[in-house]
Amino acid sequence: TSYPVAMYVRVVHKDAAQPAAGADAQPQADDAHTDVYFLDVYFLTEKDIVSSGEGAAVRRALLLPPGEYDFYIAMRERQPRGRKAASPKSVVHREALSVPEMTKELMTSTIILAKNLEPFPQKLTPQQQLEQPYTIAGYKIEPIYDAKFPKAGSLFFVFSVHNNGLAASGKPDLDVDFLFYRAAEKEPFSKLATQAFNETTLPGQLDGYPKVFVGQGVPLTTFEPGDYRLEIKITDKTKNQSITRDVPFTVT
Image (cartoon, rainbow, N blue to C red; front, side):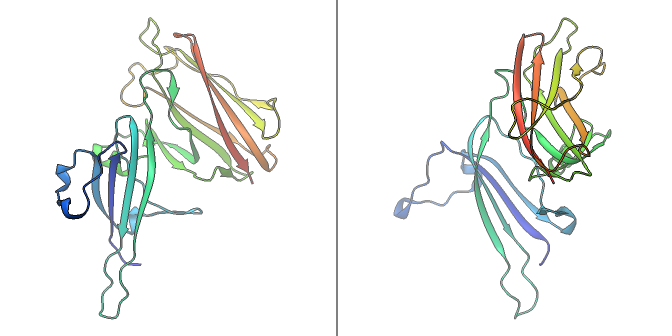
């Protein structure tokens, strides 16, 4: 109800030693805590709060090495003016955060489900990238969090492929297949055309992150309301390996 809203973000490794309690406790500055892997403070205005049918969202990015963490976020609104004004609202949230090792075997990022996917060719500065974490690899993504899509709309999904091999050309050689299943059935009822990522389809120079970025949109007008599963199979021809990812979603 009162802006700006202060947001404090802190990420601590789960293996960190617990601070001393009682008489032995000694206050320390934040820079003395070597277990803190990320720490930042933001002051949010109304334009930083993204409203949607699912509520309101604040989007920021952080960078962490592989490991298990505790993620803390605290928010506090500005003190309202006036002596009789109520105390400012505040909240603290703690959540477990797992960052996988992305360099040892063929794997993908999290499959991001989206309500919209738009080309965004301009490059962001590092600060802009932190503030716009869903602007990735030349696309602006509008994520959806409950995996529910209207029949009149489209299902968009995006992800990156990591630790793939390289062909003699110096480029990846990947095939990506997409199969759609009704939730209770074992056989697919629909399949999209295979997407190939190789020297003939990838740009002359793979510049930036991620190296292989997959984005696709599927109209849902032929899908009856109900629960579905998207199966994504990534085949790396250079390593003779394949992995499969399952993505449940609902058509309303």
